[in-house]
Amino acid sequence: MRRTEVKDRLRQLIERRQPGEVLPSERALSTEIGVSRPTLRAAIDELERDGLVVREHGRGTFTAPRKISQDLLPATGGEQFAPPAEGHWTSRVIDFATTPAGARLGKRLEVSPGHTLVAVTRVRVVEEAPMAIERILVPRDLVPDITAAGFESGSFYELLRTRYEVVPATAVQIIEPTVTDPDESGLLGVPQHSPALLFERTTRDDGGRVIEYTRSIYRGDRYRITSHLTFDHTSG
Image (tube, rainbow, N blue to C red):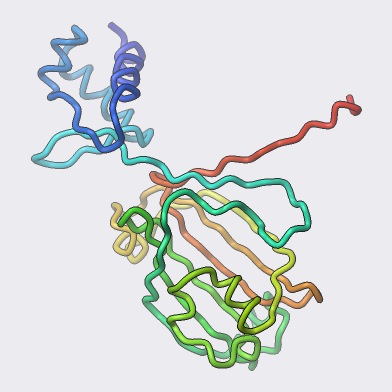
């Protein structure tokens, strides 16, 4: 039996199980599928690289945890850039400070280099698992009395609207693949150089003023994005 056939058999086995469920031992699987253990092990290696299984030393091989889905919709001019992602999300602030913008960030936020920014790094947690690291930069004059707690409870955008009368209106967001560095790996609980998604977002208010720049690292093994497309049937 070829390795691709073994992978297909294993995929069918995984699809019948719940996320995080332990798989039978290699010996049992090789007997059930009728394949040598080296071939089986090579197929499991590929499934692990594909993010479908997780090996834990001394415990066995498990189906991968459930992926958290985030829908992205076409721009509609509404207040919400995207529907909330699945699950119950909480935040843990690990760094809160004020800092001069400097030349690079001043240019990005369209403020002077000496302009004071609130700089926050927080870990986003869902289903008790760290899912993302967000570094948020906001001009301090927009949120003069904000504390770390403002970034831990509820929606930050809702806080901007209700407490500071700052209305997020538009955003440009760039998404690209990356891998985690040692610090990111430690915070997310994944091996170094694990696949990840890098989000960079610049948000403006209804007057065109930049109110936020955020750089986020999301786990590639647990987070996925779904896009909804609408086709124009009048064009060729």
